[in-house]
Amino acid sequence: MLTDLTIAQAAEGLRKKEFSAVELTKAHTEAVEALNGRVNAYITVTSDKALEAAKKADSTLVAGEAPPLTGIPLGIKDLFCTNGVRTTAASKIIGNFVPPYESTVTAKLLENGAIFLGKTNLDEFAMGSGNLTSAFGSVENPWHRKDDASVLVPGGSSGGSAAAVAARMAMGATGTDTGGSIRQPAAYCGIVGLKPTYGRCSRWGTIAFASSLDQAGPMTRSVEDAAIMLSAMAGADPKDSTCATVAVPDYRAACGRSLKGLRVGIPAEYRAPGMSEEILAVWQKGVDMLREAGCEIVDVSLPHTKYGLATYYIIAPAECSSNLARYDGVRFGERAEGATSLDDLYEKTRHNGFGEEVRRRILMGTYVLSAGYYDAYYLKAQKVRTLIQRDFTQAFEKVDVLLTPTAPTAAFARDEKPEDPVQMYLNDIFTVPASMAGQPAMSVPVALDGKGLPLGLQLIGKHFDEETIIAVGSALEKAAGFTARPDLRAGVSA
Image 1 (cartoon, rainbow, N blue to C red):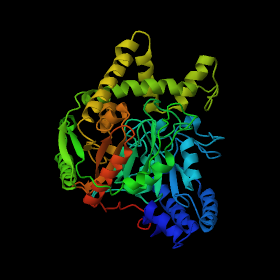
Image 2 (image 1 turned 90 degrees about the vertical axis):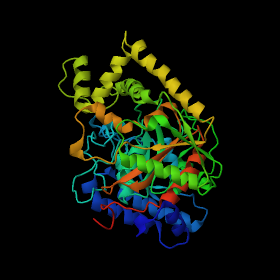
Image 3 (image 1 turned 30 degrees about the vertical axis):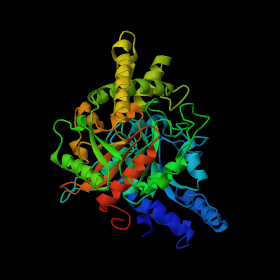
Image 4 (image 1 turned 90 degrees about the horizontal axis):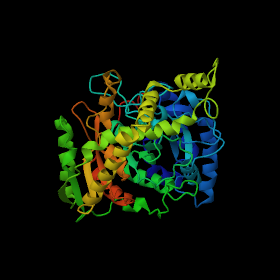
């Protein structure tokens, strides 16, 4: 089936004229039409635009010298502004926003020939770990437990992108990662998720959550595909002063590279209390596979990791309270009716427009930034963040890459959602420290748990050394031989 191909396979097939871009795109638009009513991976579907773009892609392929992603159908997280296509951030407050401009990342993908199938669902303003806070309804994970019909979450916030890729409703998708929002849903859905170094991809035109943490990255079904997509997405951007002017290497060339002599660090602090035996066993399996591939395994310590989650939930809400202040019903976003004063207008607009989780984080952020508490909370959190960054710097003096679990559990069911929001935040416990330090990191699916759900391992690398992560991830992927597929996917449940 065309929907089962990887990006690399599809690109080769298009050039060999085994099928056309129109046929490839049509196979995916039909999958979206058949499955989206249940999976809810897309908020906005743009099938007509995709098929028009596919016709142009076929003409480009005939003319020769087509860019690498020519004719490849992708899903775009609904946090990236797309010219003339509704962009909602999964929130009511900008639910009718149609940008008159294109984000830098999506513009780069279009320049490389990609075809957009639509805008994928997410937690509202990317705040969540289960894709349960979208104003457009939650997303269903295409995977299910053995002999259990419970609907599982796809992870968050990029859960729509992860579900679309896993269910064969897109060949790849964009995600954004603030505290693990690419890697955790990738692990829950059995796909590859790559968060590049902070500053590797432009944030211009991406709706902001926490500006010092947000980073765009690819979500795909293979490490090689992630490398192909990242090559197209990365690069300096004069519109974004936080985007680094660092050369973009040929990431695909790193796939299959020899790992002989590479030092892989195992951080002691990632053995969290109460961690399941299955996760520990998968982690050990990863260690054994990399040792077999010629790596030297080195024990390392990241002593301030235990403060990562606490400091993240001070810094990220503080930045979100500042970024989301613009949606006040006057300058940006929907405006509430019936207000009797300016203060009443702000209050009604923001209460009606934002969901509960977004309001909770704005309140937390406003509190930690307020007079009398700034030094006690925000400033102290920034100092601890520096210590977390220093831990990584010191660890990378001894090793080339770190190996850890991606998430503490497999995907959980919607009705198993913890009532306590703090328990929900623990899903990001292994991904947040790398985000706080700005390190690149990738989740690779390596095994199924006893209930038939995918488990992922995380690779964390040095700043701007995505190549080593890709090289190690490629070896891990080859050794694991993960070929399991979700039971809900194109051609099976369609």
